[in-house]
Length: 314
Image 1 (cartoon, rainbow, N blue to C red):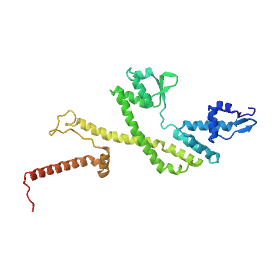
Image 2: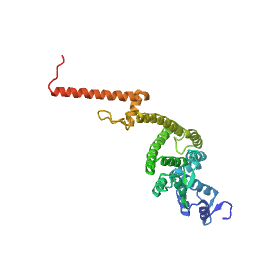
Image 3: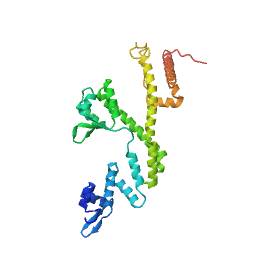
Image 4: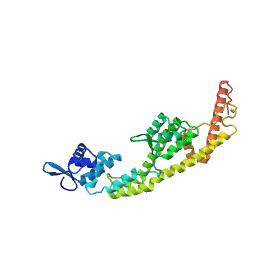
């Protein structure tokens, strides 16, 4: 085109990376401003190119075309989009200071004792521990070097690779539940006032982005502290059990005792709420003793009644 910053639709497609068909579909959905009609040709400008790049960025971040339409409509009516895009960037930004790394198949083999098992590698890719590098069959991106290092240490300690991946799957599900609960909690008590209308105003979105920056480390700090507390508690109990005279490997107690019995987590939580953490063991022991005594008395009463020896108490 003759003017600077003016494009035919084919040129706009080339500059934006979108196809001509996609550009026309965006026009039909109202995502792009109407181009200027000049003779028999449509003339697009830099604003159209900028809009196409914004749409592509939001799509990459997981937004649907319908939600993008709402955001762009708000921007076009003067409500602003800068704060919203800032919030989007903040949420999609890194939630850890850890930096991704790369590793080759040979490097994996070195870390796992010369074993670069194809099935294990495929499972690591499925779990996202490794990500294939396009065009490099022997190289992978490692999003979390710490997670890979944990797997290496566990394998060196004798844990089989299938057990490691199985444990990660289970742990991931539990952590995702924690993350979901934390987001529900913060949304209800913090972010609802910023996001109560769709789309949020530019100022509210900017304030929400600032709040995300403040609260981002809290989830990990809380989980770290609680995990340390729980590990200290259970590791101590586990060690006491294994070092006790009647622990694993000791002679079985008279009566066929089988050692500690695991209680459901909900039961433990209810007991903790009732008597406090420090009295859980005493409460469970007392409740067990009470139940045993009750059943003993019931058994005696039943056998006495059966033999016809019930004595009437005046």
